[in-house]
Image (cartoon, rainbow, N blue to C red; front, side, top):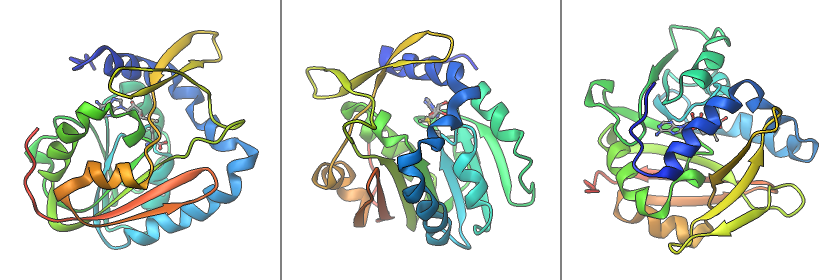
Length: 229
Ligand SMILES: C[S@@+](CC[C@H](N)C(=O)[O-])C[C@H]1O[C@@H](n2cnc3c(N)ncnc32)[C@H](O)[C@@H]1O
């Protein structure tokens, strides 16, 4: 899908994940992360059990496959043709899982209203000045009281790709190399609990920040407040 990205960083991220799609899930094989992953693969679907879930930036459907075991339905969305193509090969139950190619910053009202949402490793790719635009897009698709889960990386020296630079707004970047040798600069932020609370502001009625060795999980409830971007 063609992309009218708001910034060079968003365009770069989109083309990076298109190029990475077929090798993407190797990230889930890192030996030191296995214990956290087994735990989260149970915890995340359990938290959203029985709900109609909107998944943002589903990528290759790694988390979709676990969500599908417990939720009433999941609409798994991503902007990138290549990642969605891999996700569709997982042959998940079509009575539970649907896929749609949409931009997380412009979720159309036609998607409907959900009482759950999940985004894995998406929040860290939001530039600080794009968080409100994303939240406005997301919350327009949520019922008040919806439960939202954000899963993302903690920065762990020796396991995480080192940060290569920081811009004037404080966004951090990594240089990543794919198997074909191509090099990509990717915006990747590592917010702590305080920062996440600030970012969620009025849209979250309650926020829980759970920490694991390699990941954090933000669990929040949509307050019903309308955001403007
Ligand atoms: C780090 S991957 C996360 C994939 C998946 N959630 C997971 O945890 O395995 C980030 C995803 O964001 C998607 N993406 C990039 N820009 C997007 C946008 N504007 N709207 C929706 N998805 C986008 C990429 O295609 C990629 O699949």
